[in-house]
Image: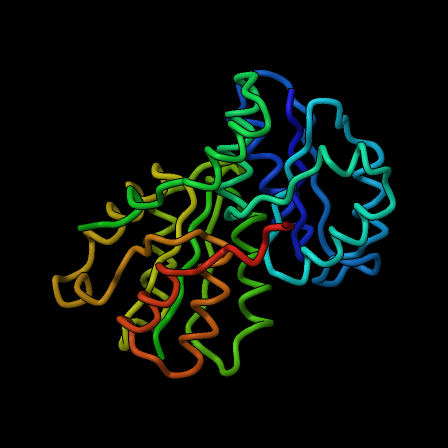
Length: 132
Length: 132
């Protein structure tokens, strides 16, 4: 199963998103979340991200959901510590963090491969939110 | 100033997003968040949303950010309780909840009107997240 790692500037957003994704998925998938700095402030920490990346199952690929651009930089720093083989299995999604993690967890739990999951969450239609 | 109301199924996502939006904005704007059910589970509650809608400043318009489709239904039920005049000032954004709330708070704090803020957050480019 493809895994999902949620990386937010906010520990609350990371944990809340993980809970929502867990509730929506059909089957168990590798699903982890990390957010905030070591001293509990808003921000991300390459070291904390690295530790989560080390622990999470990555055999079938891993998709990382982020919030702001600056979290991507720390994610990329964390990924640099792994071998090229592992590096190839990790993708940063161009998708909204909450909606992408939830739909991604559902797609991954249906046993879709990493390209299918990534494609699904990068083309999420948010149009159903609008009141017309 | 245009206001922003964050409505999530998760209290943690709602509160975390509010903190991030608060940190990014340039000036004070009406900014509130509500999430979860009365008994603390994942979900939304029309009554809780109504109370937040009642309290928040709406004179210059209010943009509501939601996560999943089912929160939109409860938001619409809550809005129904207000007069047509107020109703016209409230818009549900077709935008990702976290990224939309953050960019929306920044745009609103620059004293942009509701159409400008809505247009900005509904066309957010998430492409800078991708590692190529």
